[in-house]
Image 1 (tube, rainbow, N blue to C red):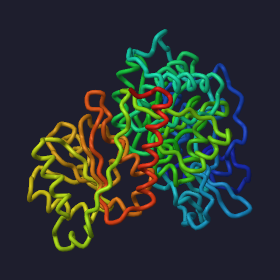
Image 2 (cartoon, helix red, strand yellow):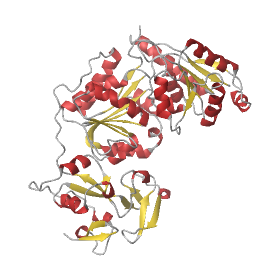
Image 3 (cartoon, rainbow, N blue to C red):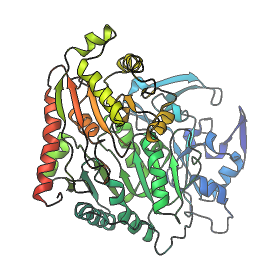
Image 4 (cartoon, one colour):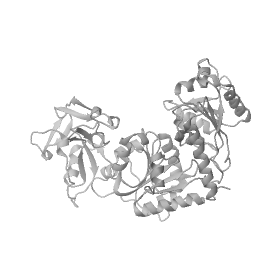
Amino acid sequence: MRFSLENETLIPESLSNKPDSKRISDYESSFPQPLNPSFKYSTELQNLLTGKQLLLEELPFSLEEIHTHYINGYLHYRKCIEKTKDGYSCVRCGNADQKLFASFGCARCKEECTYCRKCINMGRMSECTVLVTWSGPNTNTQIPVKPLAWEGTLSAGQQKASTELIQAVHSNDELLIWAVCGAGKTEILFEGMETALLTGKNVCIATPRTDVVIELAPRIKESFPAIDVIALYGGSEDRNKTAPITLATTHQLLRFYKAFDIIIIDEVDAFPYSAEPMLQYAVNQAKKNISSTIFLTATPNQTWKKEIVAGKRKAVTIPARYHRYPLPVPEFVWCGNWEKLLKKKKLPRNVVFWVKEHLKMNKQAFLFVPRITYLEKMVSLLQAIDPRIQGVHAEDPDRKDKVARFRAGEIPILVTTTILERGVTVPDIDVAVLGAEDKIFTESALVQISGRVGRSAKHPTGEIIFFHYGRTREMIKAKQHIENMNKEAVQNGFVD
């Protein structure tokens, strides 16, 4: 085997489709090589690449070793960038928008080389690079007879969904679980996950936000103590690991290829998954050809609701929380032109009264605002009342620390943007929204925000107030959504 050395990158010349070509993308094998059973493959390479698709540059192995595995049938090369009749497409993220491709003078292939700009933060996908996948035997994992250690009891609504999930696992089917905020969606997954593990299937729980992955990981590990569980997000220490249970942000699925038998997508309606075709492409690429896809949401979009009613989408609905109390219904409170007051460094009187009352009662609360600029002004004014009050938003470097301090009771009131509308559970809190009429507060967002209240069995009730300068259709729809769920829960005997 001859290799040429260009810019410290070894290129296997014998794979070239064209004798004069130097582009690694021309060396893709359309079909995996037959396995050589006598070849002693690297278990380190196997563990790193099983179910993954990684760039050559991401592999801590020499190209000689990588290519030796290829010619013995244990690796598969895939082009990073494909030429189409319309221009280019990216194999990893599915990007076909020609405005999101660019070219550069490449030192490796000595030509103008096109690359994808859409997923470049995960490593550059260019014409002269390949994705490497494992095509040898998978890592063998011993699963105990009883992998699930959780000994809780599911409510009637939870058990109904759990039974449907087990059936979807057996039949490799799709299922939408439409469960209200605080219904106990995580516990609903346990029996289905156990069923999958006992039949040799790999499970992935994907969610749009890092915060949710971090919060979910210890709960899954506690419930499946004898099973390896990895959590993948930007900067995760588990990045180079594989396991029977994978928790990941939806962005991390771009690194996987035909890896999972079961993919559970939490908060399927949430940004960025709901608005980003790249992430939906990543999910489809990460699951095996025969697999189950489970969607979880408290707020399905209108299209999915219509499909459920028409019988075109298989779904199970849980209209009540596990503790059998109805969902707290939001109260609309007019607060005047709050934006004008903020510009004058003032707050609406009823908002100030609400804050002071909660400080007096020693009752923690979230106060949601539409924009970071409003948040900063609000926090400055509220800290004059109590310096312990803090604010948090997506770009806040201390976000995790502040949320942890709020959980610990050190912060009495946390002013926040919609970044905390999902995935954060604090047992005994009230919630208010300032500027509920703002367009950022959709029906879905307001339902999720309302769902922060009354989630604990010890504290099943609470207050949710929409401070506004005029009622909107989205506010009314959110309130009706919650009232309809409570009505359905009564009809089904799910609340006391």
